[in-house]
Length: 261
Ligand SMILES: Nc1ncnc2c1ncn2[C@@H]1O[C@H](COP(=O)(O)OP(=O)(O)OP(=O)(O)O)[C@@H](O)[C@H]1O
Ligand SMILES: [Mg+2]
Image (cartoon, rainbow, N blue to C red; front, side, top):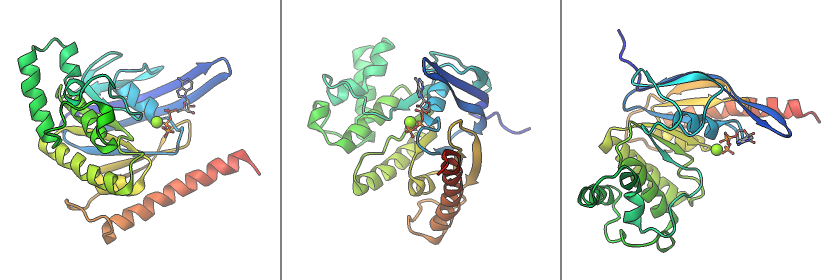
């Protein structure tokens, strides 16, 4: 018998209902993620990626379908998923260390234990010396690493990152991709990584799911069968890139055809 997946998403449907009408966003999404796997999700803007992550993380309720972690159904408000948000979400009035310790504080972990755990995180993200700085006193890349540490400190079963590395210059982004991979390997966490960037997904993932335009359905799945550490411009990476860009291009053309001339 095969091992229970770390995460199972089964037939998720979600419609947003507003005064201006209803929008079906998730159209029966199902997939599994295995323990320690690095899964990326790629899809056009507005297709439903953030909606999907929020449902997985228990921040939003689906209309129907199930999310299972280690074979057990989880619902709204569960806390087994660490979330790196699409928008910067550090508290501006808290120092780096106080931001990292936030999740422990709300769980009532005593100060000495919080300090021991945040020390470990500060070392993991290599930000020793910056722990007493406020968010406006660190760089955008350092802020992203602080957000990662804040999500990891409670040792979530699964870490989801919603375009956690966007809006950064290419060099910082490449550096943080490598840092993210190092942290993933050191912590052994299971990762779901939403990205707009095909190269990034190929460089980082064990497997990539491709979503259609809204309403989101899974229209492609690639197991990235390349050894690590990967070389960005290697023939292997470029071959996956070409295949995935093809699927996304066809999807884009369909959307344009629907809009008409
Ligand atoms: N609270 C809401 N109420 C109504 N519609 C919403 C709401 N949140 C999102 N939507 C709509 O649902 C669709 C999916 O939104 P979502 O944020 O999940 O997309 P996304 O794939 O994350 O997009 P992006 O790549 O731009 O971040 C969009 O068309 C959006 O306009
Ligand atoms: Mg989004």
